[in-house]
Length: 394
Image (cartoon, rainbow, N blue to C red; front, side, top):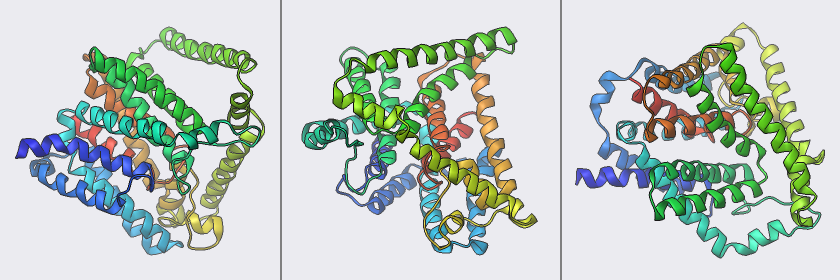
């Protein structure tokens, strides 16, 4: 029975992630899927891990608990509580899976691959009218959404995770399954492209690129310059090819690329982000000594933005932490991030396997994506992957 539950755990985990990132499309409550996640987590949890948690895992977990106390002085208490319930409940539910994950994380990647691929194939086959409406939009513009209540930036994370799992699975699958994983790589890449989410698309590219650079990095100026030069040259050549290719694309596809990726109109979201970044930093600068050290309280950026207890966040995890939890929390977070980059660089001394590659690439994607979209609640998976990394590196 124990072995059966251990084998089922990755499926429950992947299904919960799918429910979280597909909104009301999947006919199941997020609360019920979280309860299922918690139940299976309790069944597979090894209490011995509590006695030998790494220092970084202890810091991260205590910090998640500490955030609760910042609600006491938050100007957006209701929003802060709503956000904290999501972060706390999911973090400590996924905490139960850490012993199982660090043994063989590839099981979780494979599970994400099969579940996310099944959902995406269903979308293509049975939601074709929505895709057709999204693509053949003429001059009006459009982004792919599964449901009307789902932000395109959210579903882009779903497709990004599917794309990452597909690429990683090509390394472990053989024969027929390898062909399927190659097909799914193309499928997820196309669906991700049509969400129009530049942040998610760039984060996927950066995830693999940064992992490779840190892994291959040698402490010599010559080698460092060579790798960076190759990246810059590749980006320049890629941009040149895209500019040429646009002239040969059908009108509807040309219009989509122009509206979402290349025109001045496509920069509107960037300008909105810059406004939020400036507002968060200005709000931090205007605070007193206590505010600078401990923040204005969890969720309080919503009050700064709207002057009411409502949802609002700067779409950048560093600025969110800085304004709402202060410098001490930001320094702790930076310390934990630095440790992960350090662990990545240490991999140059050992032979890589799919578990190590998967955890690091997934972390880098979630980390870079959190710098351009969402709040801590929507970036919940980042903290859980950090925990897995810290425990697997002991």
